[in-house]
Image 1 (cartoon, one colour):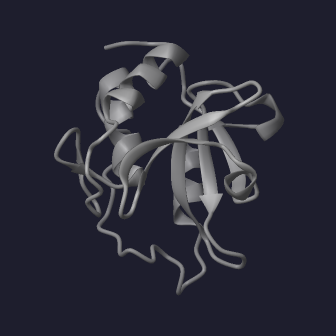
Image 2 (cartoon, one colour; image 1 turned 60 degrees about the vertical axis):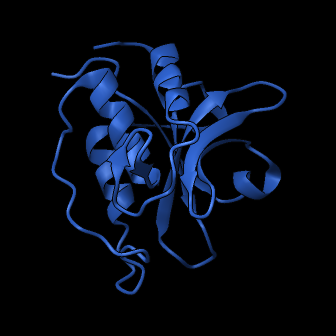
Length: 148
């Protein structure tokens, strides 16, 4: 197993080009945004902290439940987006009034921050954290650097 922020970024980058496949988490074969995060967790920390139940493309939007946010709070450390660091996890709300249902891993900070995510129709990609993406960020988390 690896440890540290640069290991998290290196692992996330090793997934670049993986096709988008809903509910999948297999490097090179298919992943959605949560699948990418799960794969990074497995490579860096070992076993996933909980079993992910089956989920639809709309997540828990019809019920208005913040399931992804709740899971992030259970296993990651909440932090201020102003303290953004490489290896952090960003949680996005894809539309106003919708639940937060997209995640990505910060790959670079500074003048041109970037993040890695699995995006429908694009697969696992690295994008600039541009203003349209930044406006969708609702929470920032750090991976636990030590897992019990």
